[in-house]
Length: 75
Image 1 (cartoon, rainbow, N blue to C red):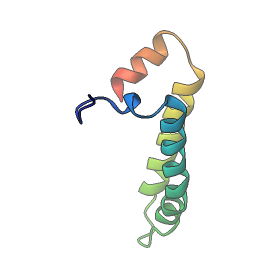
Image 2 (cartoon, helix red, strand yellow):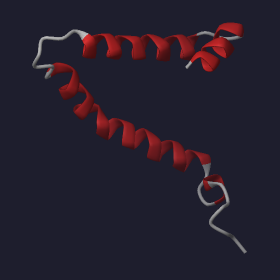
Image 3 (cartoon, rainbow, N blue to C red):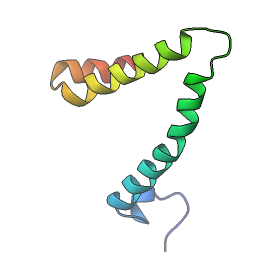
């Protein structure tokens, strides 16, 4: 008998969960772009946050070994 405290992978395969997370991320992209563009105060902070996020994601994706492990602990 399945209970509610079981992990979600018991109910859905990993490919389904990955697809759901990807679709949620893609649906949020227009909101993020509008947030970055509509900085009405002329502040550069939204651009810095977006650039820093992209840099961290690229480093995490392309680097292997110790750098990837250290980045995982820093974030």
